[in-house]
Length: 457
Ligand code: PM9
Image (cartoon, rainbow, N blue to C red; front, side, top):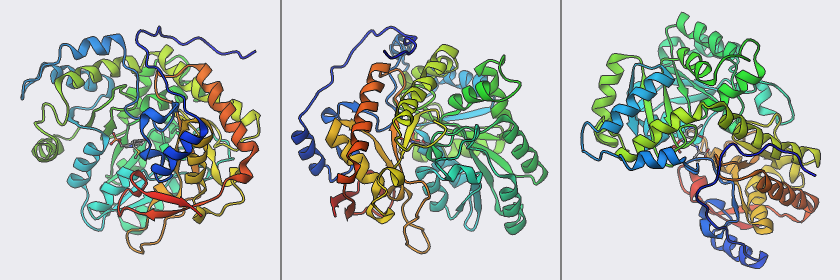
């Protein structure tokens, strides 16, 4: 008998799921060019593609949607969101954006000039894209442990201060517009950063007059890990931990589609008055008026309420522990996964899972495709395909981590669904030798993973 805690919510609305035969799924995958991004959502049984925008909103959020003020300027929902962001994140100013990459676009255009270096704790696809599009070069300064799926570390997202200092020595602080500090680190496996590390990074950056901008996308999950793992925070509320985390930075970009618990939205926050004034000038070009960015009034209301709900301990504990439950089951069955299990997803180590394939045979892409064909579970490649090509040499980036992400949407699936997923992955692991590699038949020039098409080798 399985033992797991009950969900801390009642289910008010349900969406029926469709099951299909293996033959039907195979045909759907061929049509999608072996890219799980290109499947029809209707053809998916359990959808673990992403936790982005897939959150089930609460009754209160839906009620908030009804009081959306859709005035072109000065919406009351903006004033609510503005107040909530300031209260929960502690920054002086904020500008709403349609989603996280909208905020990344604004920040990168405002802060980066050609030749600049942007240190960060592991790349993220859209973040690096905007940094490079503005003439910057991303430099990875995460601790070495993060690149090894089998190494256990409570804060595997930490920045290596020696690597940061070496960049400052090599390029000079003037060429570093800011450090991009992600909490948690998505592509390392949803790994957290410790408060102590943030404090130390902040001290080093202050010494050299370098700003820190958080990628706050999954900051509440990071706060939960601090509460659980770092000495001195056991009795501190998630809200207070979050505020302390953000106090070590000068601002943040936020994809509201994750830890703000909404289906669309984001923001750019900062303390600097001049940067805020320039952000308001730029946001009208790409997003909309500073009082809505790219969002509808009703969406801003849902996000304001979602931010308050996100720091509720019962919610965040259930969310992170449910992810761990899935990871523990896979690990117990000997399936290679990234350790320790992170906040939003279980990452399969595709190199070890499909050890008969080399990285240029795209093992993670092939594994994601076959998991869908076998079980109807949709996952996402996070390996060589996602990493793209070096902008100077045109060669593939070859990340050490070749992963398939089983991403758990917030408040959507139950523990029983996790059992189904675990069984599916274990069954596939037991016949892993039958999986062959893939090759590109269409490779888009940027962010290729979204629209690329493949065929079996
Ligand atoms: N993350 C994810 O599935 C959605 C798109 S996949 C490229 O993990 C971080 C850490 C993210 C992220 C999106 C963004 C961009 C920034 N930072 O999708 O534009 O995980 O809202 O956010 C996705 P938006």
